[in-house]
Image (cartoon, rainbow, N blue to C red; front, side, top):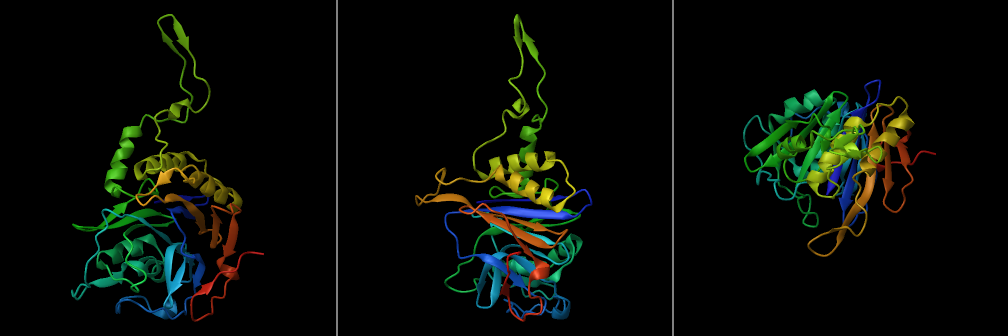
Length: 325
């Protein structure tokens, strides 16, 4: 499972990141797709932007058959997208739409399609009105993953879910996404926790007994602490909404990693049906302020930086990003 969040600094620049929680890695690395990179498309999309005006994209993923398969990524315009597990509810179209206005996008290329072709969340919203997400695998060795997506820029975030009754685009005023159930359920569920507070409860008198709080944090009694999708959604939404806005890049990166640390999954506590354990394999952060991708892994918690400016943006194929010196 996974958790994604978005917020802005005091100047209005976006920070966007996620925990990737799973039982195993796939050899993922920080991948850059330069504007001139020749990337095979799953479908003919004449309405895509001219490749000469494509955005540079940086994020975590693997490269298969010349195509970057991004788990999460951001672009040089400050737009970011992340795919999170949605195993029970995701329902893609089995075949491409033949409608003359349809834009067919394979599920595996959706993050790249978003980040490479659009500058703003408003542009993405408009384009999604014509999109059909298709259950097409890039190869037999890489089956279709059941995902939904968090997309954000400095103006806000949306959640895109393909379900049995069609494609849903949710406005995400909580700036959080986890997993099952669907976003509408998760957003409604927050109302069960509206009495949570970051303030210390007042002392109370019960008959002759005078009761005082043990200390700070008692206003959060009742906040869920397990690692399920609903529990992580509530906790991440609360922490993200209460964390003080910051000015400097370092402070905002710290904010993102600390917020996602509140819902990170340690090894040995979230057993899958096959007996394996999920854990937070990595945490990432995309800064639209500096156009830098940051990440830290479970076994190496040091945060590493990959500035887009340090990458070869003239390459004609996807490249692996160098770590900042």
